[in-house]
Length: 160
Image (tube, rainbow, N blue to C red; front, side, top):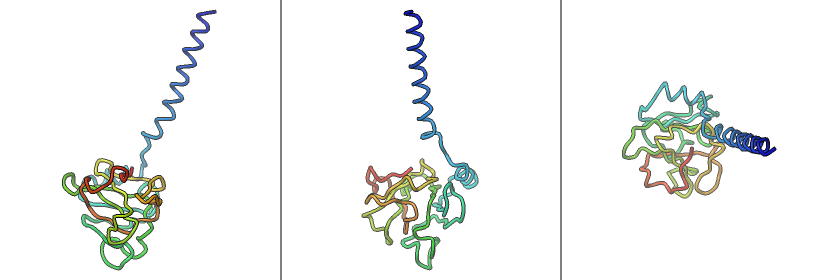
């Protein structure tokens, strides 16, 4: 009877371990095939990109190596209806110096509400799970961006 109890206990612990492992894998192993394909196509080319849809799909809103203070205006790489439209973003900038993209809730890089994307993170395939530093959801709410050093970003401002 003791061997049976020990075997059942071991089996139960192994099952719990598998369940815990199964729950952990999707959170760390998920990566959108669309963003992966875009990353593989462009690599580290010095640009920031944003798309209207999940997983770097749908309309490409803009691509630039520079900053854009107003995604709603009629100048720059992001224009017109690009403001408040991004659902996925990519940082394929060069590593070193100002290699973090700060995405802002307000035009003109108003630093009261932003989210930062490190170059090592590469992309965010679903902005619905991210928030600006003021607590507002990032999805469909970005209206400007700037390249900054990581030290310009608060510890709780990094998105993934």
